[in-house]
Amino acid sequence: MTDTIDNKLLQKFLEKDYNLSNSKIEKIELGIENHNYLIIRMNQKYVLRVYKKKKINQIQNEIKLIEYLLTNKVSTPRIFYTMKNEPISQQANHYAVLFEFVEGTHPPWARLDLGLCEDIGNKIGLMQKVLLSYNPNLFNRNLADSFNGINNFEVIEKDLLEKKDKILRELNKFDLKSLRQSVIHSDIIRENIIVDNNKLISILDFDDTHVDYFVWDVAATISHLFITKSVGIDWNGIESFLKGYLKQNNLISEEKKVLIPFLRLVNIRLALIIDWRIKNNDGDIEDLMSIKDSLLVRFNLIENNLGQITTLFNKYF
Image (cartoon, rainbow, N blue to C red; front, side, top):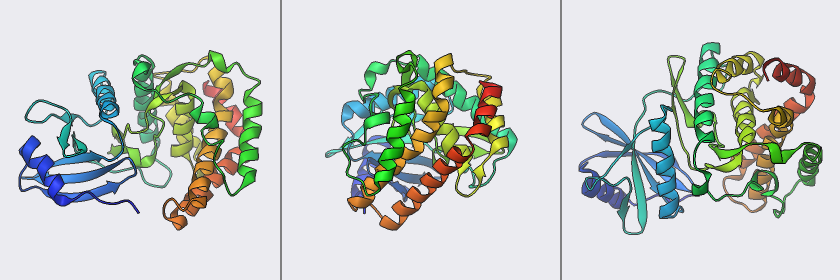
């Protein structure tokens, strides 16, 4: 279980740095890296993110990235500065950032409206195009993480490692050095986007942003949003997403070739990480088992429909 932040500390952040005394505080999400709280004062809403593990320079880099995206018209919550005109608030050994609260909902676990799918594609495409031009020196995570970050994990199911190694052998056929590298979001899931009236209103949570292969983010986004245990493969949703995406962005030749292997690898890599967490009792085991099962269902859906997926991607890429 993840511990909460003391309410008195939260009040200190709000009162001393943001002049938000007598605010109502509600938990939104208690994560490993940070905790998020909904702040309500005089009918105004904010989100206070309290960081638990990130160092100050990492938070500063995240803020620079968000402000860069906002400058380039990417939809993401803006940051409120403290009364001292600083983006980060500090109380004791804790850091916090106050974000705009964005009205809307997360997409449902169902087939999405095709107009929404196209709008998501358009705005994710814009974000990824903008990130291609962003300075990668602010982020130090190595490219190898996407492929080999779980090599040293002791997992329960060795079959998962075999699946991962098979995909890596397939990728050796391609010129990976020609793939573009950029800062990527890497976690475009339903919980990290806000929609309203069949429009993407905001992209959330740049906590896992790092330098990686550009096409990795494309594969992860398609997998997370359009291939699910509850729906299966949302073929029409993927098509509409790609129509919107291509209004902003495209892939180079070698990226098109590795898109499907990456699509498969995204799910196996996550399944291995979850498997390691199960082995080490790192979290709610029942929830972890459910997540792992969903990832393997997604992987099998991709494996069993490689021909149709290839045909679809060839139509657009």
